[in-house]
Image 1 (cartoon, rainbow, N blue to C red):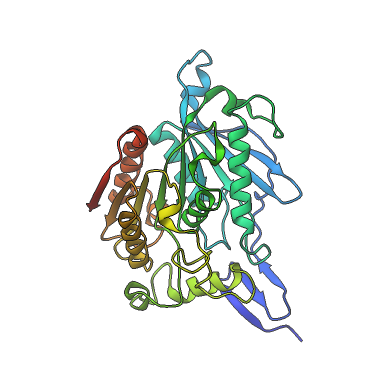
Image 2 (tube, rainbow, N blue to C red; image 1 turned 180 degrees about the horizontal axis):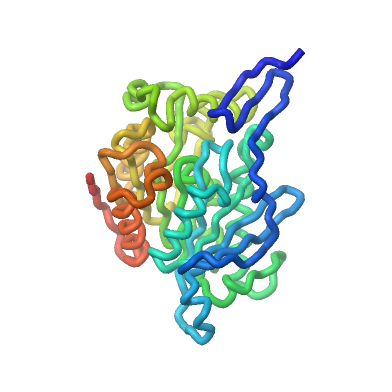
Length: 338
């Protein structure tokens, strides 16, 4: 007799009562390092830990790669994709295309991290993988070390211009990577100049208004969000765990964490809207350097689902401006409701 189904994430991930897990396999998950032509951006995959299945996809503007005598180095973005800690990878076409556009639009090297997924690997596995990826990147800023260097990073990356970028669960990972490691100095001599959190995924047992009013036909619904928390948090935990609730007992205190300057983008029709706004308000009360961009008409993951819409273009322009403005040198407290 078949075991009863206890969780179903849109048919892509199913969890059964006996512990069996069904996941739609992505044949590109463990692709070996290879150079791929992608128009204006070249990409390749690097395996960091084959046993864990931890790998990254690197993106480099092709024009810079072809100009071997180029003296100028490029900013470096470390990117963590969304998916509720349970779904997707850098190879998912939506995220791959977003990252291609990011590298081309900003003129930056991008390291997209394929962290381990729940429920096979519950939190803090994704956090641990994010920190490992950052340690690998920072190892290129010094000679020697425990990690094998990649020639793209050695030759083209400016390690004094490093940015973290995460969307949804990826923004949660980026937040914890900074908070748990004691701030931006953790990867010295690499300098984390800023972080971009797009529709950050936080939660709590108490519902916000935007969660309670989320329509059932939304792309990211409250039941789906709850299911992601149930299978990704440590067994026996609820949504007030510090991994999901940054205001809970046991979470690093925001006022004590030396966060870099932040750009936070929020969708006005996103179920996570109010929680994102609360997060920004807490950061402002702590005196953190913060830019807030609210895109009133957008739902969750609009930048991946509608990459060429006006809001996606404006988000990309804002990210590019944030990175080019050297935010460490000029702390900005700016709210942009658009």
